[in-house]
Amino acid sequence: MDRVQYDCIAYWHFSTRRLNMKIMQEFIRMLLSLSRVLKIPFIILRAEGIGLKIYNRLLILKALRSRQAGGEGESYMLKLKVIISVVLVMSSLVTQATQLSVITYNIWFDSSTAEERVPKLLDIVAEKNADIIAFQEVEGWFIKALESDGRFDDYHFSVERGWFDSVKGGLLLLTKAQAIQQQYIDFPSNMNRGALSIVNRIEGAKVCVATVHLESMLDDTQIRIKQLNLITQQTAKCNQSILLGDFNFGDGELENQHIGLGYFDIWKQIRADYAGYTWNTNESFLAKRNSFPSEGSRRLDKIYIKGDMLTPINIEIIGNDSFVTQTGRTLFPSDHFGLSAIFKINKK
Image (cartoon, rainbow, N blue to C red; front, side, top):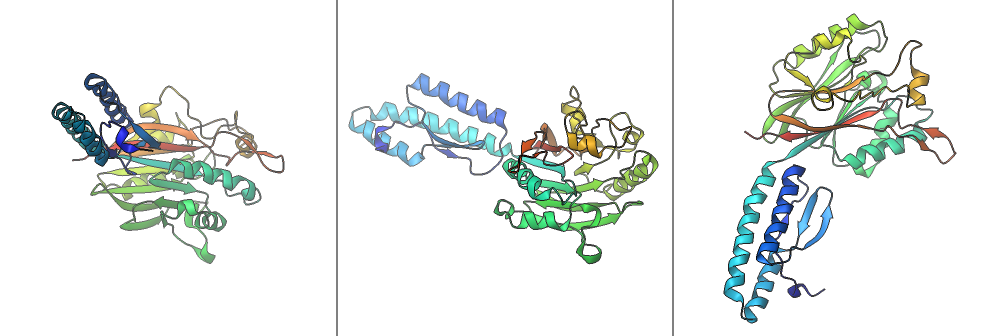
């Protein structure tokens, strides 16, 4: 390909930084409009996820010299300077609109189906490339599966080990930024439940991240309230917090009145028109089979935030499609569905 033949507008490489798609779309729309007005083609070589690589700025100089040789140099240079100036301004806006992505997923402790389920579950999680991943019902075999999967090599693992190298509370946090502090607290519990919390530095600010798996039985309401009170106390000093996991209570239940002051339920904030059942006895035969006799579909898995640093952009259910294994068996990745959320980071 002879690059000099192209009259390129601009170059901008977004690397792997997460972007605000609305700004990104405006950026591209603006360049397209400007290219039509100034009669200069806008060339995109390729797209990479939500980033774009736009033709190399050095090629603008080559194209410029080519036009100058044809007698149009002064006018064309002015047009290019206008375009480049606009690109630099817009690139500044896009760079500031960084994002944080988060996943929570109860992976189901059942090792008898793990060989068939877990590869699919890991595919779903890896595709999201989230900055923070919280897992519940984790056992040693699942950590080994993660460690042997190269797609998770860039993550830092935060886990608390118990007797015989067990995973305390079944809780695991994966973060792209290394935790600067880690703590595990034991809950009052009949099921050895607790909370795993870390402190991450995000865009220079300290953010507390805590994952929980609260008591499971339907009549354990008072125990769950005590557990919520404890995690609220644990994160009280955190101005910016993310609390996520399997809370084992649904909408309209008493526990909702005991969420810590300042915490917001992301699903209710931006998807209130949709039930959002992550324990879905209507759609998942695994959830139906593992339910209590009187239990129906509920929104057990949640993501809460506290503080003004993060603004939720999107939240969606993941792992809600069944698949057929190589042996012809129909399964879901877990008996729970997971959650994936994206936040805009508000820089101060």
